Amino acid sequence: MIENLWTHGDHAIEVWKAAALPDLITHIVEHYHLEARVEMARMENLAEEVVLLGDGEPSGQMAVRDEIARFCKEFRAHMTMEERSLFPYFLDPGGSRAAGHAVLMPPLVKLLEDEHLAETGLFRRLRSLTADAIPPAGARNLRTRLERSFKAMEKSLQGHLFLETQVLFRRVL
Image 1 (cartoon, rainbow, N blue to C red):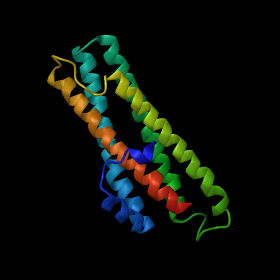
Image 2 (cartoon, rainbow, N blue to C red):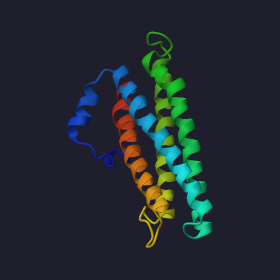
Image 3 (cartoon, helix red, strand yellow):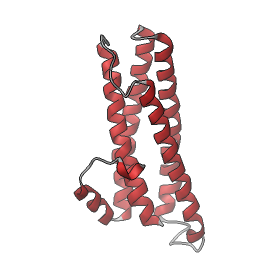
Image 4 (cartoon, one colour):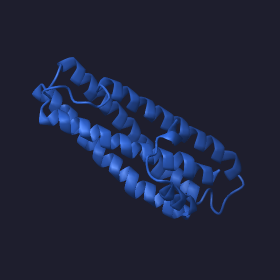
């Protein structure tokens, strides 16, 4: 469950619960979305290099590369939808809180929560394909760097999804 994944302290949670909505959304975009985009690019490049340089069993490495590409494509689309459509709506739904806000908000939040669950599911699949992100004995530096990038993305994703699901969405509802 997403709320059990965040490893930051209670203090950070309370700060963001009390923050103004524009500040919270700006933090999510400028910290977590940026961090995710950088880490996804790193993971994709490293996974491709692992396959091209033959570090590990070829079909297994291609499966990891393909799953990373799938996760990144879907998560980029998710973040873009949030940034271009939903976050602006959260900040000014129909102009000064139109009457439709109460009707539209729960389905929008449900859609995002469902996508968050799908993203965590894709990441769990990645974890299983990479043997829980533990480099195999004799792994080259490249494979170790991919595993390190994978773990960094996982940690960021946990904080990101927790902040959106447990703080932002609760507030807009």
